[in-house]
Length: 106
Image (cartoon, rainbow, N blue to C red; front, side, top):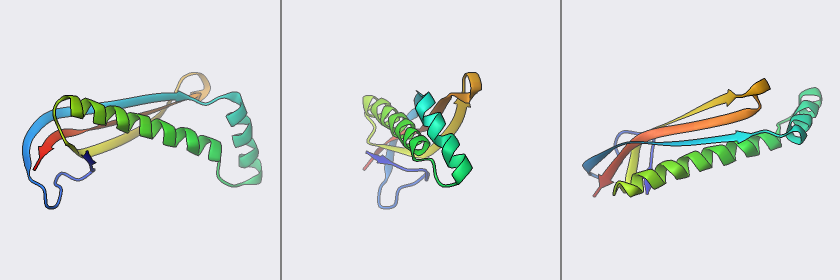
């Protein structure tokens, strides 16, 4: 399945619009990751533990959106938008949502 943030796909024709599809993923950060991130804040550098959580949440949301598009008979998703939010007590949860238009391409 072709998934893109653009509204057209070079060399492809959109023959059918199937509707808007969504994907959501909420992942909690645990105390160990918070501790390591705190150390990184003090000594500098990137927080690999949080980056890993973000990658996992994004991939889960995109995979869910693709599955919903496939269930509609689509073979592409255009106009994809990704959003990130923090939730919960002390912002202990990360939410990634994505949306796009499921289409049939030829």
